[in-house]
Amino acid sequence: LHPRVRRQRQMCIRDRAKSIALNHAGVSENEAYDMDIELDNEDGILVYEVEFKSGNMEYDYEINAATGAILKYESELDD
Image (cartoon, rainbow, N blue to C red; front, side, top):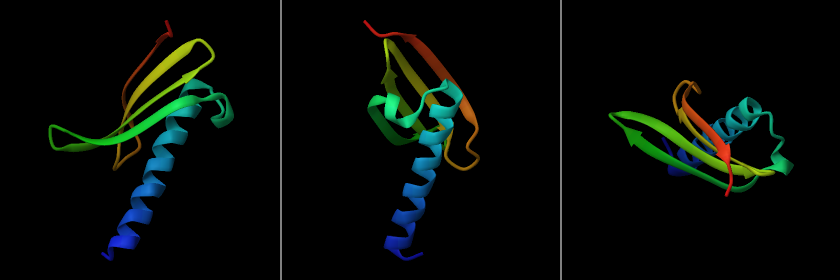
């Protein structure tokens, strides 16, 4: 795969992971801030770690990069 195509595909999957997390949290993209999305390898499985804040809440997600499944999520009051 050409590097540019690979990069575009990764961005598309990254955007999908962001959308999955925001939709699950019931937060629109313009309500979210301090968004951080990183691709990580968890025991041989590629996962996107998605973190963001909205209002007085902080959200933390792990999303399977291949399937889009939410593997783990947490939300807590932001101090």
